[in-house]
Length: 569
Image 1 (cartoon, rainbow, N blue to C red):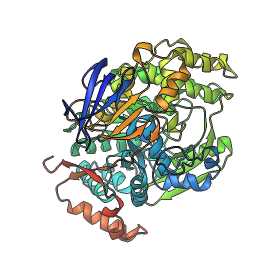
Image 2 (image 1 turned 120 degrees about the vertical axis):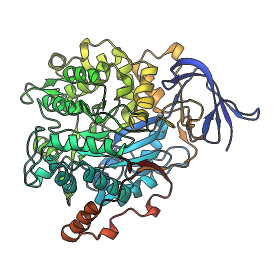
Image 3 (image 1 turned 30 degrees about the vertical axis):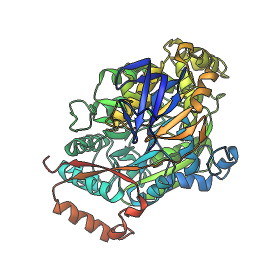
Image 4 (image 1 turned 90 degrees about the vertical axis):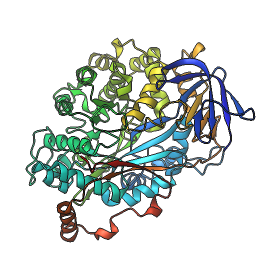
């Protein structure tokens, strides 16, 4: 592979504590090194910002749920379908882009890794087919466990070891990365037309509560010592007054200690927190609870969060939280798609327009920004849009601009139709903080990498780490004062290196790289009881044969397997 020397750039690297110093970065054999030979190709980064490649900690980018959205929303592709310069295919779709466009767009933004946040185990083959076809970026997927029959039965009986053995088996079959929980217990309750809105509601026919599910899965996660924390979408998403349930859920992590060899210090990752930070009793008195939620997050060190920023776009909501999607359909009366995944999970899809002329949408926009601005530790708070639920991921540059420029966000805030009402119900107008480039690197690079257990290779520019490098046309000595200039600079990298190869140059895709699929192989002691239970349920309930359940090697031909030894737990 070619050798490179990136010269004279302003480097922002939280891994090494570098805050904009002018430094050279050397690249050889796909890694960052201390020095290269005299024949190395020189990349002039003068007056530019150099960061590690960004990591997406939570998005819905691959699998049956995403593809169902493409099927039943053919209008989405009319918003944005084109061929850009470079070696790309035609790029179709906006809120639910094709897998090809997904890879291209992430790369243009400076991303080199994305986590598919909700993989139904039964349909894991489909997820991996789409991951394989997504160019450039490395990816992984989180199987969902919060409404799984096996999990609820084991945890009802306090059988953490059996729960862990079952999870390890599923992760091997599905080539999954970690434990995802969506509306624990509530999605299973939805099979009976019900829901679990607090962490103490009991799941029909399983006699277990969301609190018991989340606590048991955190314990199972640490029993195995997985790279990533339990990743949870909490109960009562999207409803006024839900912040109390959110804080109750976060408190479950108190006293549970991490057990892993991957550098993470947390046991729970709470995702798209914006949707869980609401006060009020109805949409008429709805207001922000971001301060109450972040006050707790700031003092509770063993949790991480991501924001779920609203981007004020038309988009497509999709989630394994089936009852919420039916509820949303009842609010906006747009078309609704729902599916039940036997023994495992469910999903729903509803289009949505975050209209800036609607006060609720404007307040949601404020709340997402407030969460990031209230965060005292940027290494534990990450920027997301819960793509595509709060908006498409390609809006990240605009979110960065709002966070980095008070003037820019105030301009947007003051032009809302009901600006006085929005300001009165939120905190944003009174927040002067502006995120700087170093904090942005923490929230989009070093922090997510550490949270995912990937900090050995991702999220920094230290010698020995992956040569995943994003170079932006931003001069920190003359930082843009205008939001549009910030947004433009982050929308198209000057260069993106993936594993030491230049994949994007001046916003143009020039190489597809060698993307990899990450998954975790958790070695567990032989558990004959769990294997008996698996075989019995496949015979009695599943519509597929057990032999047809695993993801074949051919579906994930370029694997990066992380092995965890839990046999001595």
